[in-house]
Amino acid sequence: MAVRFGTDGIRGVANAELSVDVALALGRAVSEVFRAPRVVVGRDTRRSGPMLQAALAAGLASGGCDVVDLGVVPTPAVAWAASREGVPGVVVSASHNPFGDNGLKVFRPGGRKLTDADERTLAERTEAWLTGAPPRSPRPPTGLGVGAVEDGAGFAEGYLAALQEALEGRDLAGLRVVLDCAHGAAYRLGPRLLEALGARLTVLGAAPDGANINDGCGSTCPDGLARTVVAEGAELGLALDGDADRLVAVDHRGQLVTGDHLLALFAADLRERGRLPGDAVVATVMSNLGLRRALDQLGVGLRETPVGDRYVLEALEAEGLALGGEQSGHLVFRELSTTGDGLLTAVLLADLVRRRGRSLAELADAALTWVPQRLVNLAVADPGGCVEDPGVRHAVTEAARRLGRDGRVLVRPSGTEPVVRLMVEALDPELADAVLAELEAAVRAARPSRAEGSASP
Image 1: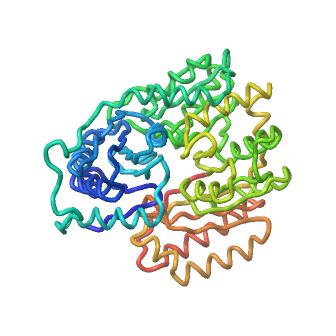
Image 2 (image 1 turned 120 degrees about the vertical axis):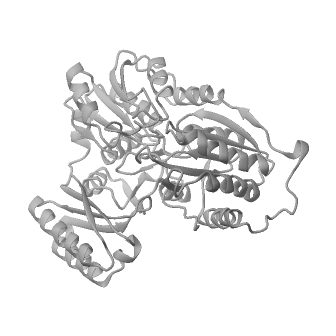
Image 3 (image 1 turned 90 degrees about the horizontal axis):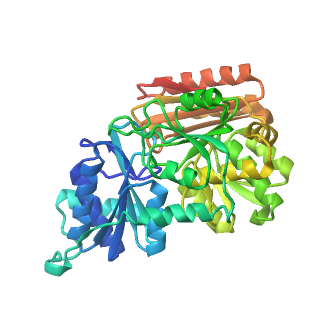
């Protein structure tokens, strides 16, 4: 089979595209490529997680790597442990995908995202192991050369302590918060963190059964969180995704506060406190036009990247910037973490609300005026080929001409699913709808497309 790294690792249906053979081969490849004495490994709550992690650990140990098993922990906890130990890390998770999917996300030594070269090499070596090609080393280790599997549960305590230290001695005493853990990787650590900081906490989505991760809950479905916040008179709600590397919020009215709102809020706050080096932030091409306008008013520059927090991190490090993120809620505070971290974002947001002495609703409304945005995902046989179809490219050019400076259009293949993502923004909602309909028609007319729509408001 062809091993492909998408936007965030290797993903697929567990025990089908993402088999134990793939996990075993990737473990062997990681041991070959990085030649590290230890590798830290964690997972989310999916039923297939222990199966795939066992195969992954076997591959690593067979290559001579000791495996430090962190258990069920957020993705950023694995990155934190890898950073602290100076070793690679691997996470068994498909993030916000349905429970039947799973994924393998690799961090290079020090908890950093993989480079393009890393991905190519790992993919090649994984495929080599799957197809029976000779290993790089003619003799596998034996005896004491075989890796051991160790209990690494203690790393979770250090990770929680690091998150608390991000508040520099402040706490959240008395703040009324609802936290939705998406029945995912943070179902234990998330509540512990906020309670330790003194928040008056209501917890949702903290009873995983192996099949309910992201099911009608978490950052991809915050409706239940919004209802609970309003019903309980909470000051804000916080929603994580399945592996807790992203966060969206709701205010006391139950209104959604997206990653773009959060970027605008944090950019203004950090700049005011002299903590925004370069007076610039990083965001992806999917960020709302309203964010660009808000940053212009603040006098803050915007560096735009492709979708994926990996690209956000690369841009942050290239210029020594401090803040970046995605509309989906992946926020990166480069001076505090090597990757997007939903729990870190949660405590920093709650702290910002507390320090400012104003409601999240007031802060978010003042920070950003949302430009009407239409999003549609169309399932296609060949997303990359569809986007390059001449008819689709012409439709995109024409849409951009019609929208002018008061709108924006984006058509791109997904890096995690077999879909083409369409986005249209316009100050005139009716124009946005019309342009989107034309783009959908162009994608459906592309050959081969086999397009089926899945819209997001």
